[in-house]
Image 1 (cartoon, rainbow, N blue to C red):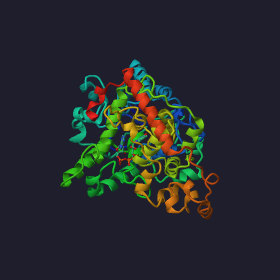
Image 2: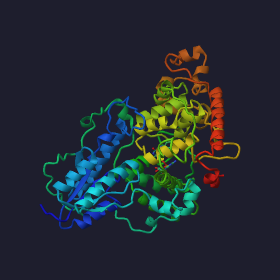
Image 3: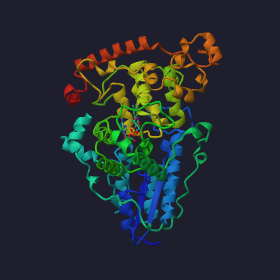
Image 4: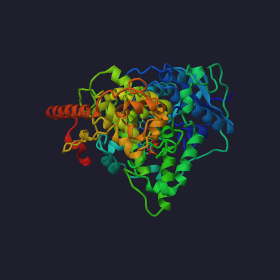
Length: 525
Ligand code: FAD
């Protein structure tokens, strides 16, 4: 075994070969030694019990773990084609890494910089150890287009609290003109792995999860190859990219979703480089006469991701209401039965239930579908804490992402970002659990697909089956209250009460000088 010039590339997110500066550095410096490509299966994320929804938990459901394993397999096969392979280890990543550095006589540790608080703490520990034993650490920012630290510094040490102020500060990302390394002719060899318990990528069953009927429904497969295929398919339709405009687009389109479905590849696992995505978009924009612009364009969507990463990084307690300086204090209610009915798709509102079933089965749903169910749970109907909805998304989404999930839940619950002091307040704009979906899908195809119990319900009752005469329910083989739940609340009364409570909470936050000053959000008006 050669010593002295061995490198270790530690994959966490960034599960890709293309545009991976940490991998590039590890390879270039290991020219006369070995390179150990490592992924550590972290027990923190593993909990196969499908009923595990513990508060604040980051444990992942079966769909996300499956997506992760597919991504690891794809990475392993990409590395094997280049003469290397992925070394999978299990355990607390900090401890595992220290053992690897010791045993493999590593001189250089390379990993992508991560802004999530969990990784900040973990990386601090690993870096401290590395510097105490003279191991060089290279940790580049490559999960995002911008370095959140630079943006915060340019903004006088504070995270920008609106998209507009973020955009003013951010300007062009440095990757705009740089040439990205997309492939290699070969990679340095792996050295002796000794007795560290290195394995191949495990199966779902080996991690205690069950490959059940539900998981088979998920149409999205993990991995860099799939990510690049998806990206190429999206950008090859130049007119679609040029005209992309969110929030226009049909949230009920499930066979051919109205958006790219690149989020699981970009966010959680980094199978796709956001910098490469950015360059591809710029190429399309240059090739067409006219195109949409941020915040509604496809580039604008990518920049929302940057905005949330930066704001989350610069805000203490971003994942909590209490102690979070950008979050309104609202007296949300605790109701475990209501929360469970929402989570399990049993609210009695077919539009809401179908979305929750899509989440459970597919781990992904359209942005406006997420709006609908988040609004229903919080300020729209049930008045339940956004942190509880966040936990359910955290477990079930395949694209679940700490910064973006928390940011969007605060947004949808009108706890932050959407703040507007001038009338009419945003919290009065509530998504109807009946009419919003009907606008896009009057026949209820989406509902019939995800809630087969309602498949024979006539279209005039599909969004409100409790209004169907008993004879119609009998003919449709769906008796409301027996085969499908009655609505858990009556929307008109529930939403009126929610608006009243939001009004009170906003007034109180203002009186107590709140924790968000009007000035922080003035460029939203
Ligand atoms: P496209 O419209 O094709 O956009 C392209 C890319 O832009 C996306 O892949 C994503 O990286 C980024 N993007 C788009 N919309 C947003 C947004 N609002 N905020 C930040 N980035 C965005 N997205 C996550 O990735 N992880 C989450 O955990 C998550 N939780 C959410 C929770 C709630 C309550 C809501 C309302 C939204 C949440 N989103 C989350 C944001 C958004 O819904 C998804 O990013 C989007 O639907 C992904 O689909 P797409 O890739 O087809 O998006």
